[in-house]
Length: 257
Ligand code: ADP
Ligand code: MG
Figure (tube, rainbow, N blue to C red):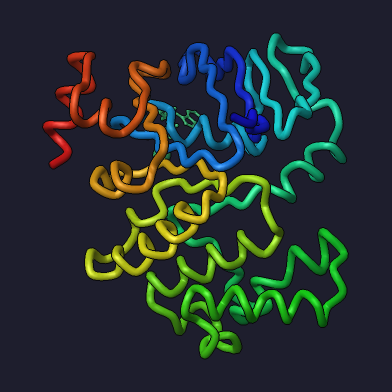
């Protein structure tokens, strides 16, 4: 068996906000092709963990490496840490595809402009090439005919599919999803999960925070259950959903049907 490379390696990650310790020593590795679903109750630290991966939050302790490159951190002078190399952070972050709960499309740009913005202005891809690739991505998520529309004219499901196309446009090493369907009306959830499911089947590396348990069970290669800032239990979906060990996980699963 060939060893798959480490896409993301998190070691002993701690994060506190003042006196509140939100992450209490998380270690987690995503290899290329892994689809990791993070589940857990509200406030358990799921978003903070994702935000530490792309340095929207700086860990208080521990390390994060992307494709073997550790993000450089230095003391911030008040007992915490800060990033040490702004250009490194920009470079690494530019190749992480992040999809948030609230779409976050740029409202003053058309759908196609949203998709080509980072390739052209951050990665320096020639415009014609970015447009061709962007149109292909929009076709993939079923939005080619909406390429010249502004976000406000799209449904929530369409906006989220556009946000996924935009994230894919930087040819990301890893896709990070933070509850991508939880702001959607129920009838729009399916179309977004279909797009994410297709990406998972292509074995695109991804870390997905979700409340959609059935979906997590179907698409993830690995499930991580976070509770009170620690990984309470993890394993393949069959084990986590079929044979949970910890009482907290049992309770969580039975309450999320
Ligand atoms: P989850 O995504 O699992 O619901 P979060 O990671 O968003 O949880 O939040 C975990 C805890 O950290 C919560 O108690 C939240 O209020 C707190 N928290 C998150 N971000 C901040 C912040 N920037 N400042 C202070 N507290 C925060
Ligand atoms: Mg969250």
